[in-house]
Every structure is written in structure tokens, then in C-alpha cells.
Image (cartoon, rainbow, N blue to C red; front, side, top):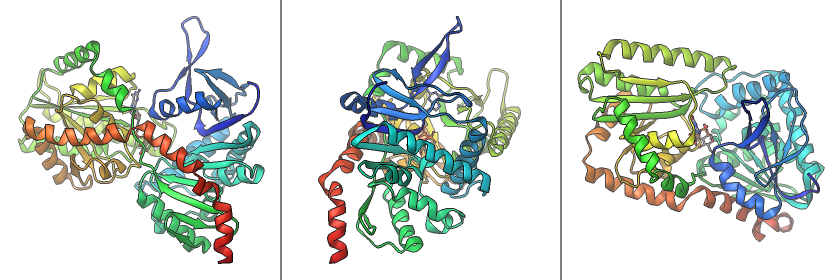
Length: 477
Ligand code: GDG
């Protein structure tokens, strides 16, 4: 790669996965997912670059090009993967930011690795960005990067977006390195959150922890202003909507229902196998409906896709055992020859198979105990131009703020889950259409493209670009 870029994404992972062909040669493929799709056009327009880890430990790679994107691989050692990624990111920050649904690990070695890896990302970004470039840092693994990068390159416009919830002050306060993290984020000109609640948690924390004043969305530092704002992320509605109209996806959806034994109701869960997703709670509700006799044997099947995730972190291993035991118990108690209540898959699927599953499902069951947004809920909505299908959705997801016509549940209340599963299964086509139409309008309007554009517009807006000057006048006033 030659030259520096005027637009740079910095994320834990590069947007590509390496695949090994049958003849042994390696090639890179764009990872599935909305973030890449949303950002790709901006990258092409602005000679953009993306810095991130390429996924293999102890390997140094030169920058390369893929799909019109300049990719800058950041190396991580096996030890750093263990301490920075599996450790501080996924055993400390992840549970802490998700309502402490698992106990966070506070470990000084993990913290040191988090700092040094963040420094490496900041240095790579400083190297790759041209004078005055826009740099957009992504997510909880890189919260120190904004301040580190600003120290190296005060000329840059720096944005940060947090994909997961930002916790209330009382929970964040437990973190031994709370000040460092907050100061890290304050290196950005714009800090984006999924919901207004996350942004206001952050502003309150800045006041309590650092004594910083704020007004509206703006936090006042000595020499500049940091804007904090909610930008609810979304999905590529038009792409999914077109995909499920393709004859081969329609045919596959029909085939899936036949393979499942043509039950009256197909219920579906699609999640990374993560303890925040409330998989156990929804299966418990479904199992009890069978036990109570409120569901007849053969009437409904539950398909649960649990994509392998963070398999070397202890909590995730334990979760897998718990879920698999639970699935075995429910199936053991309620299966009959020719009828299996739960179909559980600990596997990944391609996007087309996932779209066919969404289309085939009568009820999408999304019951996280806490979730920044939850894209699965929005993907399901995008796949139902037939205006049929019901969404059962946890109140503790970001998506619940927008998808008010879903069947909302408190995932901690198993009776509530059972009641709403039955309501979703018993709803009339007219009722389903009424709800689905409104939710589709919302997702179609606020799609991922709009999310990216609104963030970048706010980052580059004259208001925030002149924040230094305004901050100076605020101080003197
Ligand atoms: C974080 C936040 C926030 C799942 N299995 C397969 C597969 N997926 C795709 C889904 C969806 C994505 O993964 C999962 O996104 P979620 O939003 O549901 O959850 P997290 O992974 O926890 O994401 C979350 C998100 O960031 C974005 O800001 O919404 O709150 O936690 O797109 O479709 N995709 C494929 N095969 C699978 O087997 N291809």
C-alpha cells in the first residue's frame, strides 16, 4: 500500500477472514456483517484504510488490498490474545458493561496488555492517517486509542463508537482503571453510543469522576469540547429484503419447514453463544410450555442457532455445557418418535441459509439479559415482506427502543416469556401484519447506511469541528 489515508477505521478485527482453499493457498474474504457493508462505500470514496488484527496470533503481515479497501494488519502475540482480547476485553469489560450478568475479572496483567495493545493500534493509526484525516475507532476493545492517538496526532478528527451498552456509574465505578478508560474515550471529538441512556451514563460519569461540566450533549474539557450522542446501529435492510425474495431462498425456507416436520409454529433463536443473550431463559420458557401442556407435542419446534464464540474464556465454556444439558433434558422429556422439540446447532451458517431460516420462522425469539442493540431482531424484520412473523424481544436490548410493536418481554420473568411466546403463536395474520408493517418502516428508514452517515456527518459537522474555539469562549465566559 502506498500513501496515507484521509479516512481510517480502527477496529479490533480487520473486515476480512482468511480461508484456505483445497489446494492449500490462502485467500481473504470480506467478513459478513453490516459494519463492513455500511463503511465500504465511504472507504471507496475517500481512499480509506482499515487497521485491525487479522485473526492469527504471532504473525506479522504487510498491509494489503482487498475489495478496494486498504487493510493494515496489526499483529498480536498469543499471549496478547489471551490477556488483551480474551482477558481484559471479554472477561473484564464485556461482563462489566452488560449489567455484570457474569462476574468481571479484575487482573493487572490483563490491564497492562490492554494498554500496550491499544498503544500499538494508536501508533498504527497515527502512521496511516494523512494530515487532518478522519479516524473512526470502534468498540470496547479500543477505548484507550482516542486519547493515545490524539497525543500522537492532534491534527486528526477522531470519532469513537461503542457497540455495547455503557453501564450506569454505580457499576462502572468498580473498575480499578475507571479513570484511564474515561480519559481514553475523551480523546475523541465525538463519542457515539447505541442509546441516549448510554450517552447520559457517560456524561454523568465524567462529571462525577473527573469533575467535568456538561451541557446537553457536550462535555467541556479545558481546551476543547467532546460531543456525546446516540446513533442506533442498524442492518442493510434493502439487501436482506431483496435476498429473501430470490426464488432459491424462498425454496430453501419451504424445505427447512419440511425438514423440521412441518410443525404449526417454527420458533427461532440466532445468537453467538454468549451468556448475555438469555438463551437458557427462552429455552426454559419453551420447555415449561410443553410441560404445562399449553403446547401440544408436535405443535411447535424451537430452532436455536448458537454460533461458537470466545471458546477459550471460562464463562463461555460453562455456558455451553449448561445450554447443552438443558437442550438434552427438554428433548429427552418431550421428544416423540418423529418429533424433536428443540433443534440446537453449535455451528456457523452463511448469510443465505440464515436468511432462509428467518423467512421460515413464525416467531423470532430474542431474549438478551442486556444487549447494546441486537441486529438479529432487525434482520428478522427485514426478511418479512410477507408481513407475517412475530418478534419476541427483550426489553433490555437497544432494539426494544425502536421496535415497540414486538412482543416485549422481561427475560428474567419466565412467565412473561411463556405468555408472550403464546401470544406471538396465537396472533391473527391481521395482527401480525399490523405490527410487522410498522417495524419494517422503522428499519427500512433507519438502516445501517443512515447510521454510518449520521455518525460521520456529526463527526465532521462545522459545530463539532469548531469545538475548540467554542470551548475557549465558554471558559472565558
Ligand atoms: C455487538 C453488540 C450490537 C450470527 N450467527 C451467524 C451470523 N450471525 C450474525 C447475525 C448478526 C450478528 O452476527 C450478531 O449481531 P448482534 O447485534 O445480534 O450481536 P453481537 O455479536 O453481540 O454484536 C450488539 C452489535 O455489536 C452491532 O453494533 O447490535 O448489541 O453486542 O448480524 O446475523 N452471521 C452468519 N452466520 C452465523 O452463523 N453469517
